Image 1: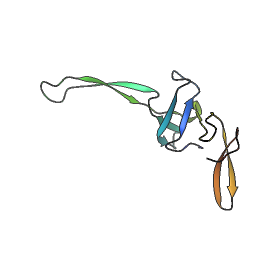
Image 2: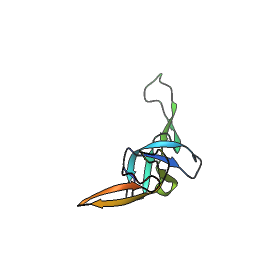
Image 3: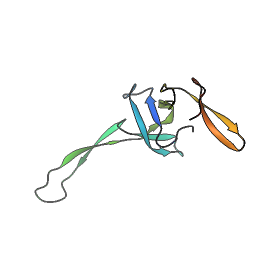
Length: 101
């Protein structure tokens, strides 16, 4: 998986197609990511104390990594990433502009 926590991604399919967001968490075992403000689910919360009102809370749900495309930090365009090895270190390289991220 080429994505990391904190990367900006563009959603390329589903109900949130065309939206951009930041990765909050990665679930590598299931190939899923949690993106800020994307794929929101509503949860009805009961009141805990007397006199308190119940409410509807929206929280992001994980989506498959294939539905998101990484936005290059240098050129700002959504693109695929390749890898470049220098010595023993590996870098992610943008396929559009060629710069490493």
